Length: 385
Length: 144
Image (cartoon, rainbow over all chains, first blue to last red; front, top):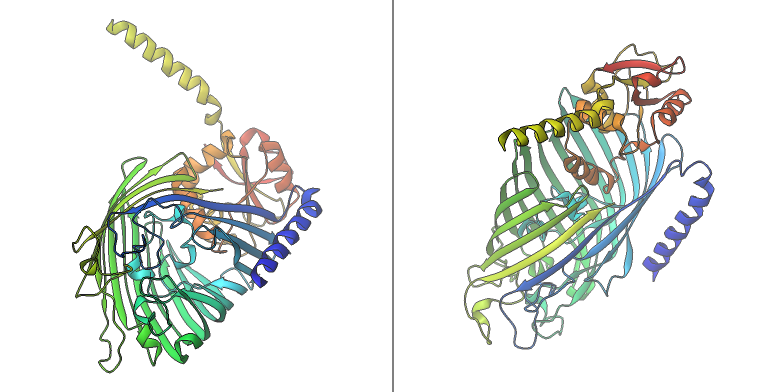
């Protein structure tokens, strides 16, 4: 309700701003957005009474349209030459048939040319593309490799960050320290916790959680050809339904992306360590991926290999680390400027008897199509405006 | 048969040349007359237009403005100075815009509109077809 109210408030504020600025040709106010419309299909049924195949249930053993479809609208307003406001509304098809929520809402204060401070509702970058995860047009895959990107379910924080950019000839160094808290967020309860929560196996069940002292730093070095980054963050997690209070979670990551003479390359490594009873639901894991593509004019075929595995999980705790590898063949086609069509075929192999990032282990499937691998197929169109 | 093909090819080339002729006019990168800079390199201008820096090389605030997307001056400026393909540029701006890290330059109409906007904004930088230049603006770079 609060979120809805905020969305309405933001929208009405924006509309009030328009007529006021209309006389000056909308000076200082800009409206932009992005949209992804997509369809998915998984080739195997994993549960007797459900089509759900991915662990969040969004990719199913039936043609589905909710896994990737979403719309974002952004309003930016300049208050004066040093202060600006940004609000982004996001509607994801997988959440209650596209309920709108405020994904970003912050004020930027430009201290001087290299340094800005931002405060409000922000997305801090755990990984290379975390902060534009929803903008499909800005990256080559349909979904960023889930092995890495599922490690941190905490996307949005209320807090403050600093963007400090330094130029060294052709290189830009970005230092971005951040601090925040999160209230009222939910994440999908891992299948392994469902019996403790009194839920039947195979359900897609959300648990609420909060985070305190969410703090970290994002350091990136970029040129026209590449971006290399390092990130570290630590926070304390609370989830009353799981009996979790003030358990420490740490994330460390490194990544590089390159676009050079039509060669497109992305690679990241990341790990998480979670203490206390939270480790039962979210064990220590590490993950990596590499993507290589070559651009032929408007066509970009690409291949991705990714893996998620155990990160020396303490033996005393009962959490089950999820292990899987995946291989993805993708194709991106530029439809004029500002639109891209993407196709993907992804082979997912759960490992070491775990379900990986699927809702259940395909070997344990009591229905049809037994085997180790599951194929995901996807097609999307991504648009920015 | 072959000569006929060559004839049509030649005719096509003439049309192509005629159609693109206005783009051969020199382009001027302009600022407000109060700007203390005496010149700027194409790379420095590109850094300002791509929001890599927010200031002129002398440290003063720089606010870049664009012409509307189909104008000849804009096409020439982007091919000669920015040197990024249209779709690569859209991806570049998507990453900055939707993470609140930067905004693409504001669009201000055509050569005449842009010149008068630059003439009345001390921090502005823009580009116009050379024949629009007069004493209300200062030229920092000429792109032949």
